Length: 162
Image 1: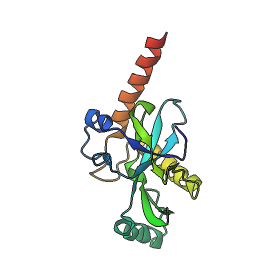
Image 2: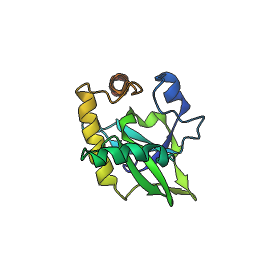
Image 3: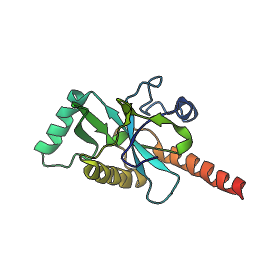
Image 4: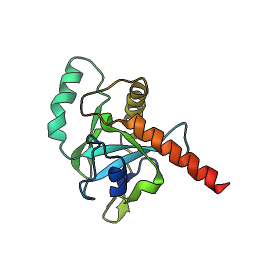
């Protein structure tokens, strides 16, 4: 998996981790998830859902900015000449086993270069808060539980290779 790349997640992930608040792939049609590597676990990746409904989230971003508060939970960006929003508050972990395929546009793997440092910094801030038990709303998935299960899988796979 390439960091900054966008991917489609397998249905089996959402079936196994049946959290009602995960931003599912809508029968394989969710546009994509932005990928970043976990700094502590080589085989663990964090993915951020990307939504084409930027208008829905623009008010939240504007209100935060107007009150001079950081808006780390969302990030609006143009992708393929359309405004999209990274739903950073909905970040969740996955392993390569659950990646269906690269998300492509015109046969090219979509890699996010514009604002990728900003997006990653916001994601790191959100992950720090999540790891401290902060919740951003009642619809936040239990990503720490998912992470724990995935780390068990990684450890079991490593033990089976020995």
